[in-house]
Length: 225
Image (cartoon, rainbow, N blue to C red):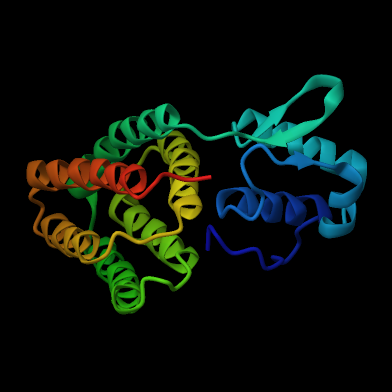
């Protein structure tokens, strides 16, 4: 699981700390602009200061952390402009990957799409009944579904770039801490059907609308931060 922080077999201390810190930025536990104090982080993440510096420099390249020279590191800030930029970049990458995936996907791929949507829809039903539930599990399942739809795209560099952009986009959902309800669930179900039926143009149009209405929901709900 992309949003899972449980230790994996054979991982180093640095790899575990990297995944934990990265997730804590994406899910908002480390807030935008927060000063990342190495001594405190050493206690929380059980990694050396040297290892933490390497991790934070790596996250700075991913634009999840801001390096401030001799003053250390902060969690990257957020803005309306960046959210719009990330949405448009996600659309560009994901619609291209979706077309490739729909053209090449086999029966196993279709089954994976249906399975991922089933898990997502179960979580959405809970959130529709109780919008105060944590959004974190929904974001993980949302990633699982959208990734499943593009998993047959044979372009690993595109997939890695898309995953990084998706995480930065998802961060805004986590900071807003609200789920946009039944409209999102309906769009997901419709997208599943269009993907399985190989209705490429309609699926791309719906995906584009889905991402842009997500932005409108985040900003219309008072934003984030």
